[in-house]
Length: 361
Ligand SMILES: NC(=O)c1ccc[n+]([C@@H]2O[C@H](COP(=O)([O-])OP(=O)(O)OC[C@H]3O[C@@H](n4cnc5c(N)ncnc54)[C@H](OP(=O)(O)O)[C@@H]3O)[C@@H](O)[C@H]2O)c1
Image (cartoon, rainbow, N blue to C red):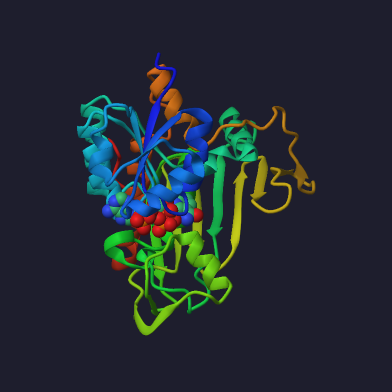
């Protein structure tokens, strides 16, 4: 059993700050690399990380690092993860795992071939009320699941003046709202309801062009400057290449049906599950309690039988390393979600139901 896991982070942008806090709480955060060394240095100073590397390759060749955390734009997840696995590291990767299913499959099969531990970001699984919901559904007292409906939307891109960052470009981001936000609900349904057999999806762009950025910036900083009307952008605009909004109808292997809507133009976070005997609903606003309704009754809060767990997004990954386990979410879950994303894209292009391939296939 390995008690202290030494971590190297690649990517020092917006979400990297949350990663740094999680790693420091549960492991030994040893080094950081980014595209611009000044970003890595600034993250290192803020979080007290001892080593700053010139680039990802330098970090991967350090022998005082056991595991690598990837927090970069989506197109870099695949090459960095493969290089990290080749260097003998365990790998934790931000979502979505890759740009498409073939990249994700290669990442998962390479990890398996090397018997490496992997993890993928899945913050949804940390909400105490949803952990309770998962347990209640598994215990089966609500009966068979009939329908699942979820919204996962953040309105950071609602203003057409928000600039054209990598998130709007297919080569760097892949899909838009679907891969950036819908992926959370794809992971949630696989966890709460079961495997998805078929999808029928529509992807929409409402703001087709956006102003070009004049200098690079991290997501949170761009949002802050934009809100304060202090962000410099060019008069020139460029095309938005992926979806602002997606809606995906789902058919599950166990006979349940469902829908997911994700948007970067609107704000809503809710999950509703209707079963034979009970309906559940949950919202990320307010007290975030799980509500339930059985026949003839109003919705009432479900009592939380256990104190909320204090885990972070990296807890399971680190436990898998320490205990030599492979508990979800691993790259296999990232691959399964990616296959649903690919099927949704095909459905949008062809206009009908599309089968979701098996992650083991
Ligand atoms: N933003 C959120 O709220 C959020 C939430 C959950 C998950 N995520 C996920 O987290 C990941 C990163 O998103 P973000 O919002 O943090 O992006 P971001 O703020 O744009 O930061 C991206 C980071 O990646 C670095 N990078 C770019 N090219 C690189 C390269 N070739 N080698 C090494 N590093 C490189 C950037 O380098 P520089 O510092 O040099 O510019 C920057 O540090 C994505 O997978 C995203 O889906 C984001």
